[in-house]
Amino acid sequence: MSSIVVQLCIIVLVWCSRKSIRFTLAQDSLTGTNSECLGWLSANMTVATMLKGREVPGPIPIEDADLIPTWANFTLLRVGQEFAQKHIGFLGLSHLYGLLFENFLPDIKYTLLATGSSNLKERAARRYLATATQILLWYQNSFHIPEERKILLTSIKNVRQHHFDASFKVQLKLKDKNFLELQRADLQAQMKSRKQSIYNDYPFWLAFHQDLQHSHIPFEKREYPTSNFNGIPISQFGLGITQFSFAGIVVLFHKQLGIVHVTDEELRGFVHLWGVLGHMLGIRDESNICLQADLKRSKQLFEEMREKIIIPALFEMDESSHIQLSGYLDGLQHLNDMVTPRLIVYRFLRDIVRVQPTSMYLSATAIEKMYIAGMDGILTDNLMMNRWLVNKNAMFLMDSNGYRFFRGNYHTDDEKSRAAFYSREKLVL
Ligand SMILES: *[C@@H]1O[C@H](CO)[C@@H](O)[C@H](O)[C@H]1NC(C)=O
Ligand SMILES: *[C@@H]1O[C@H](CO)[C@@H](O)[C@H](O)[C@H]1NC(C)=O
Image (cartoon, rainbow, N blue to C red; front, side, top):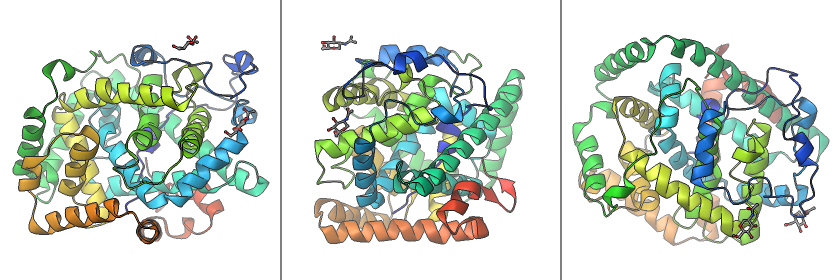
């Protein structure tokens, strides 16, 4: 089903290098000797250490030659990619939930708001699809085979460059103190005028807040770590969160998300894959949440992030998150009618936040209730047939929308890696 992923574009990394600023920092330490190649730099990372990354600007410059880190384990990367390909449908779906919280996280939402392009459904849909297209290339092209590796590297370099450009622009805009206020007012007016938007669906938002307020989550766990916006549009911390939205969610919730038969080795491979992708996209090793020494510690860190960052952020929603989240949900529905905001948010609350979304369910239409039941059927009765069907559907959704948005740029992997960011010659950011 809906693959989507995308925001990544802005999010996943942002700035990296404008060419060759020599990067020496972690390089010396990288020649170190960890036998598992994992984990020694950010060993025993916690949310407290992650938060220090708020002060450190996003993606660091890396020279092309250093794109693939010296600590990459090609065997493990292949395990991770094979796992991703096998479950591409359900994985797409989990990425979609992951991107949901990017839209309300206080540390990220201002940057998204400033770019102004993820709040309208057509633009949001294009942006998600562009990101999904690139991520799919990262799952499907080998780090080993030269021609595939070339596609992979081209795609990553383009994404880095786009993020760099976007955050550069955002940083300039954010220097103007009134900018965010004006932008918010402008977007708000636009959203209000769109009667079809979930933004204007009062019962939906009421249900959403009621389900959270009435949940078992204790009051002391509803507080987001205080942040004062420090002028860094995307920090290393923000990037770590994005890594969580792709890798962390899958490690913690693969069962609820339909990926039932999975080995620890596959999960380690998938985490390692995102550790390497994170590095390639500019995350410093000390902020890379996918470099824990073993799967057990990765799970601990991800669980702690869920509890101390993701859940509290839900209780911090304000007008800008409201705008962002609405744009995101409208965008998904624009890609596929079946993916309605209620369906997505209901399952997000139930399976990831793990609260009882009673009000959300009651506010759903009969058709949506049917979809919810159908989806649960597919998830619990995890036959190979289901996986096959969901994979096929995901690919169909990608391809039909891919041709629709990117036309000639959406044929071969090579073309996609170079140009599936553009829509009628205009960059989709
Ligand atoms: C790479 O990962 C594989 C699979 O987990 C493991 O057997 C191997 O020892 C690792 N290689 C290195 C150099 O750590
Ligand atoms: C990480 O924690 C483990 C177990 O708690 C400990 O043995 C190890 O020395 C710690 N590593 C670092 C780098 O702090």
